[in-house]
Image (cartoon, rainbow, N blue to C red; front, top):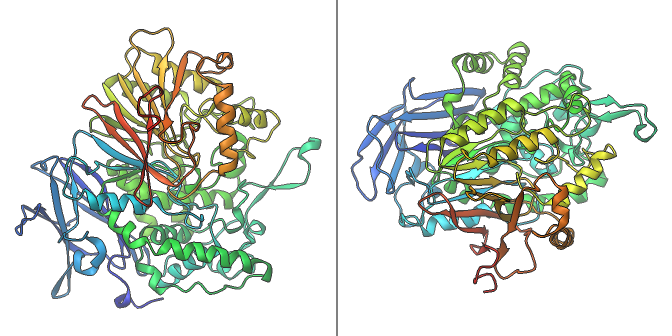
Length: 636
């Protein structure tokens, strides 16, 4: 364990989270709880207009290791912040008989020519960014770097500086971890003294035994839980892995591994304590370890810019499968197997603990009632097996991961992972992504607003050919093989959702933001046979640092355009037969509709909440625009 005096005060963060005119939420990880003050300035002014001391009413911290505390400052304002202008801030840490400032403790936290980090409070969203799927060891550029460059260029341009960053899933990859990243994770756990844990029904007794196991690196499938499968001839083979990922050889297991992963993907602070020399691995794994080490070395060099970015733009998040595990809650049978196994349940619960602390809490602090927070505090105060199991049970029963933000358009973020519409008669087929109750609540929200920005981690209006392929695999019992979860895969859920958009009382402007699929596209959606058609746009950006194989996507794109053109009779055989999909055309790539390149989506809205510009921003700062079909600009 590293002496506390040698550890950085900001191990991770600060991240700007929920920001509205009357509220600011900041999140960070430190080696100890802090006495602090957050000071706000008008742009360029030396004197603050507001100073807020962190006290019990606006500050909560949880200890998750000897030298590891996660902190949330939730500041409610009596006088709302001014909107559409730059507000600078400073964090002052009171340490013994001296003061330390964020800007001196983290010298790279500000942009050139700026003395403090800053943000802009927006009530009306005119421009925002969104993205998903950031895998550290994918051999590609990190699109967060491009967004950081955009913030630098627009730092004083209130017309162009974005309102928020919406992260739509797979902020981390728990089920697909590089060997060098796992090596770094274990060093962070040791440096910070992150709590250990005891397992039930596992081949290793506790976290310490796991980290010292000969199966710890690249061989975790020998540790991960298995279950028996059916007796049909095409499913023989004895025990089967509950975790279905083909890349689960380094699947994260402990709560400490999840927390260390978040630290390592959002901050450079702990990397200076880490060496990526070979752990105890078999000779056959050394080549892949070396290849992954090069990718991780490239990834970590940009983390100062990632830390700076996340301190300057409000970020909202929602989980998808890889934040916990691949195919999480895909089918009713998967759920029965997973939650019926104590070790699997613990692993999923550990992922949810990490998600709550590092993502969900900052999205909507009010969503977590006193009883929930008391159960959490009980574990973090006394981290034994009983309190651990109780907290996980609370997390698994929790049904309020979805949330809203009162902006214009109204931001509605769906939880399409824990509110599934299960198939009782066909438990091996994909569940609906939202159950009846959740869909009815969603309809109520959409009927209350005139303009909505609806976040659905997986595209509601996806690529029909790919959905057809997934359906064929599902028919033959291989839904897990092709990750066959899409909104159209469950008949009742699909029709209920589509009827919501057909309802005359639904919002007039519906901008659907999605990720998940590792390629990007934009659709304009119209209702057939309807005069007063609401505006519906499906905008998908994926991934920030992950890609669909380009050669395969190219052919799927071409075939899909032929089979499911707007006038194709095949559309009559889909659940969306009452809707016309107009595919937007990537500018300069007129033969394509689907783009596989690492980027973040940029959307510009008009005063009514309708998109006037849809684009992808890449790490090098270039933009690819998606033009409406028939636009005079599409060939430029």
